[in-house]
Length: 151
Ligand SMILES: [Zn+2]
Ligand SMILES: [Zn+2]
Ligand SMILES: [Zn+2]
Image (cartoon, rainbow, N blue to C red; front, side, top):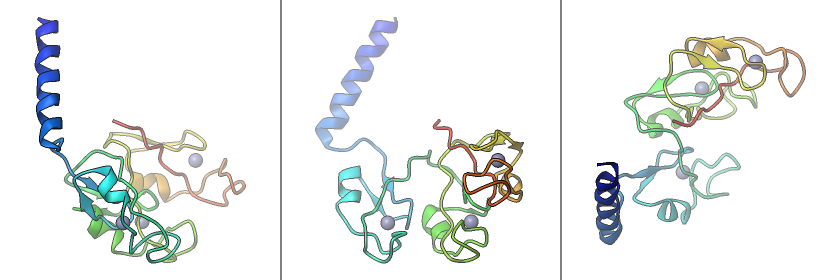
C-alpha cells in the first residue's frame, strides 16, 4: 500500500517536472515579486532590496503560503508579502521606520519563541513588543525575535 502510494507520488512528480512547473509560485521576501521558479526570481534585481534599490536580487520567501503574513519585527499583518513590505516598520532593527516590514518565515503557531532567549508569547506582536535580556547587541539592547521554525 505504502509502496503504491510512493509510486503514484513519483509519477506525479515526473509529470509536474515534465510540465516545467511544480504548482506553486515563489515570492520575494523583500518586495513580494512572484515568479514560477527560484531561478527566475533570483535572476532579477530587487527594487526593495535591503542594501538599496536594485543593489541585490530578489530572495525567496521561505515560509508557507498563507492568508496572512506577519512582520518578524513588529507582528504587523498583511494579506500579501507585497502589501507587508510596501510599508515601513516602527520596530525595524535599524531604527523606527528605517526599513520595511519583513515577513516572518515560520509556521503560524499558538506560541512563538524568542531565538535568543527562548521567551514565549502567543503572537509575534507580543513577542517583539518586549526587549530581550539575551539580545546579541547586549542585554535589553533589542527585542525578542521569533524563531522561524520551518513547517
Ligand atoms: Zn524583491
Ligand atoms: Zn514590522
Ligand atoms: Zn529574547
